Length: 499
Image (cartoon, rainbow, N blue to C red; front, side, top):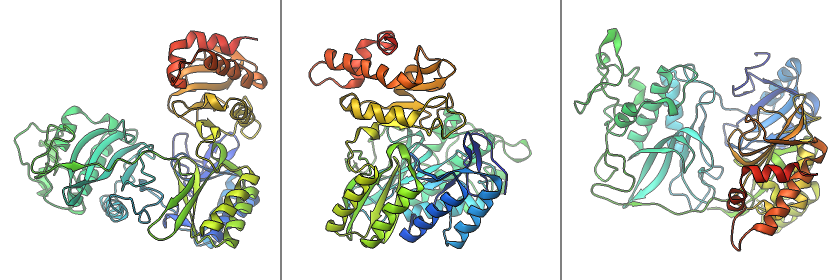
């Protein structure tokens, strides 16, 4: 086992990552979920070998913090003893209710397994960077639209058939659409994209593909499964170009490579890539609003109860207590959900209500409208040695005092340092710890230079001043984000800085 992996890597069980509070490991169960007894066992291991903090990430992974090189090895042994198989290699992710949701357009698990097998056969895991990922989204109540990926496959119903809409480099709204194809071609295209990324090096992502490559991806046709396509050179004889467009890469011995094996089929998107324009068929998108995985969800057989971790984190002892209670109430399985939640499966409606009450008492999130769901906050000080401000204390105060500020239009990010681990992307408001206290960044990331500061212990009061101004200035029906835009970055910063 490596002592630690580099910053920016995915801290798998076999390669923990050094953080400000020790080593961190991230677990993704192969089975998709955990038994209650297994989760209890992991919590006990976290108490023995880490600092007792357990997290569910924005992507739905389980993290254990505060390990040492020696204790990480002991943790890995105990995970094996619990019989928990964890995924390694390129993440190919499906929704947390995959295979259980009656509202799914399609069960994404078979296609996801085919892609995983093709990645293994092609040896791509060793050639791709640790942050490259694939999402296979079957839709339904908890679709994966909020999760970013290099390669996205989303199920759509076209006439009577299930097809897969393929896009790259983003979440459900920002990813660039390529083509809509049937399952075999979808697998082939996914592998083709990953091959192209791998050829650019381990630092590359799908966003680095050229316009010519994207055009080719939207125009190729599959002739063979990816397991027999060891490279993209026509000299191997596995691929035949279907049109005379210019080559996009150099093949073996310097020969031009033919196009990878993909093209639109009848009833699929045209090669021009205009979503919704089809030949011989129409696409029926099932409009499902994005939901937090918190609350009760009807399943094909039974119900699931979603419970959130405030800011994605909970002391292991509280997680153990909640899980023990769920076990006594009849929970059969617990699935990790994106947006920092757990889904308890196998409970009766009466048991769901009882578990919700127990979760609320322990400090978990049981309401999707809870303002804590709009705040991303890392462990901060004193839990993390890199943290300059007490992020969780600040977050709790802001959530309690300014519920109306945190509507669906905004995310508040509170980062102990400029690394921005809890929310790498832009946020409407970001508080970041530094030498000068808690800095404010408006519509930016934690890495940006703050425009104003105030002492860390007083940061919540500064946000309270912004909230008070929004209450006074907001038009009827106006969102917080729109009001912040009208106030302007300079005006918002001045409000934050005022004594």
